[in-house]
Length: 391
Image (tube, rainbow, N blue to C red):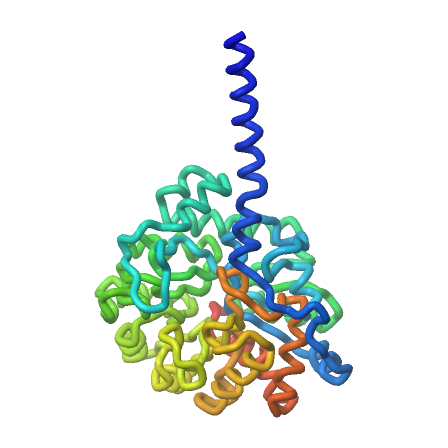
């Protein structure tokens, strides 16, 4: 009798575990990445849709790889997958790997020693055991998943490693193909684990974009949301030099002002900010100071404008369009692009399938067709064509 009871208890535990690991991660993702689209949707005129359909669109930042799902399949949660990117007419999407996020995360100040929330998610999604304790392995694991998806369906998804790859994707799309070109990046340089040799491992795994910091200070230097406000460390300078020599993109999205200034002072740097708002338009510590944005643009960089309410002080397509207009006024129309932060534990007024709502909002804001084309993707394509490894 006791044995039967024990078997029943074990069976119940197994069933509970299966249910938890099957449904809990999706439940968490759905709660952390809400859409604020009204029931009737955002209106898009025939004129705006026609323009949208002609655009070459690029987005500097999606964290969709954080969530353990097949991006080749459309789902009813989150913001991004390949079918919705195709429906939204996106040509190039940067996918970033998130490997550490401190408990109690905020835009003001976070400790690098705070308990890590991504560890729980990695375990909850039953990722390989090697990823439970290594930030490098977490990044490589997410990168390998993207690469496997691209290899399994090269007509829909291609990993862009070189300028030639970019041009081939864009040329295919001109013939009617729906291929999505993907740029692989990392949210913060901490997966390097303080070892410059690991930069080669990231490069060989397909990484072409590196954010130097995320929400906490790391071995490279200070975060915009960290405790020290420090600039580049000696290791950070090594990394920046290594990124430039390899044709990799330097991202200052979460950099402390001093770290940003240190990067800009290095000859030949041309950093971007992948996802942000404009401080003068929305005064929040998440947005880097306006003067640094101007300095980044002056070195040939571009600014990716995010979609979530915290950086736009509003949650409609019109609020994003006003931020973009403010960015154009601040740094010029040749240096503004898109950086949604889709699937990055943020809200959005539309998923990527509904991106035409932003084209409409930009026209309503008074941007010309040429300005819309630059912001929606032309500026990003130009930067990548000039920065990525040649072949």
